[in-house]
Length: 129
Length: 132
Image (tube, rainbow over all chains, first blue to last red; front, side, top):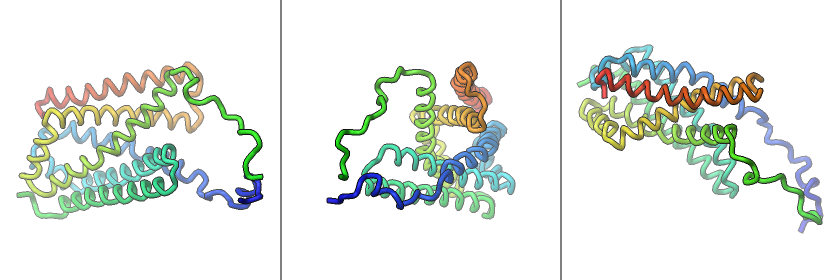
């Protein structure tokens, strides 16, 4: 048993040192998502048809490809920041919490990575069969 | 001593507060954010199917256009519009605007009404133009 007071135990341990970093990153990515998601909704409405050839041709355009890649990347990043806060708020067992945070981050990188890879295939690949 | 002699005072906990607009919309913001995150794998699946070829794309289209798929998409689009509008509301608060009682109530109703209208608008637009 320690004879140190609760205050004594935490003194000198310092803060996590990232201050407002997480909060700020959430805001910055949310600002980026406003035009990116509005573009996606506009694109959906502007496409005359939603069959394979029409959608594929749309995403093969360099500008559309770039915007879609950015959208997926920022969405996954913003999602990771948001769901991490949910985990930190409700999961209080340290091991479980760290495990979930890692699992989520790996999942986001996998999901965003494969979606971006697919978008690049569409952008640089041969015309669709 | 590592444990205080008396338990430290706790603030009144969640259940004594009256349910009201502020906390309802705040909880809904978190729930819609979570729903949007759950939709990311579906979005990735759609793009992967599109890259894979016309057969996979038709399969994905079939899945998304099934009754369950459509219901999910409509719910997902509502979650998106709500999170977008309420997120903008939060950004205004972040720069110090709109904290007054009236502004809070009005912006709250704009978010709720706006997300319903935008969801209905998107789907009736797609439906009327025969793209569903």
